[in-house]
Image 1 (cartoon, rainbow, N blue to C red):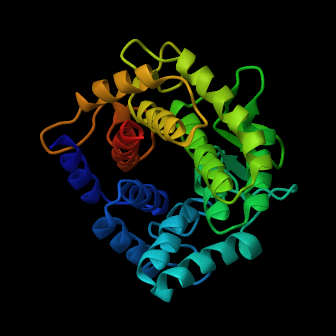
Image 2 (image 1 turned 120 degrees about the horizontal axis):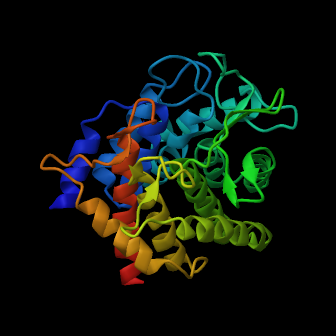
Length: 322
């Protein structure tokens, strides 16, 4: 079975904090308790002293560790073991009390400058997936909404209806001023999860604000799809390479949005993208023709591509059932 091969390959990959989080989240959404709960366990075991989950590969990540936060909360709800709740609460405490923020209170992406052109004052659009959904899952919906609004203020291109990738908020300089397809995929998935938690908790005001915004980005992305359902890595750069990760993220948003009643377009394009990306899975389960790790500036393979495929597959099934 192709999906099982994709899962096996994903579980064999080395993972940084955001990868541990998104991979565990994908397995949670697929209902594979025997896989995501052990991943939540290891995220807590590898928690740094200040409360950041799944910390390996250095000490610079601020928003990325929060990607593993929801699965820790759900593991507590599933098992009743306070070990997982302590991990989630420590992650929340870090974000609320220790994480560096912009002057207007938006949680930054990293703690220190680690390369030329990068600083601890930056926001990356990836973070819209990492932080607001976790805050929402922990019942901090107003805080989640404020974070979303901050990403919109600092990174949303109101003319193109897409997000830029990286901005340094200290001087307003864009470090990477491109409409990165995967970045917009991260953003849409993050918005979808906040919307679903708001719906679950009866916060119609948040849904009324975020559902039209999500659909605005989604419609723009759908207008940029290639005939095979995928995107260019930089969606409006004809010289850019073809990427499958962003198409699986977009497909997952469409399927879960249909199931949740807040998206009503793009099903055929999601199906086409899923069919195309399935055709790039090799014999050992690796997905090819995606924005590749570790630097994501050329085609390759990545844990997040595997996770996005698993999410799309899981929500495609749920949408069909619904």
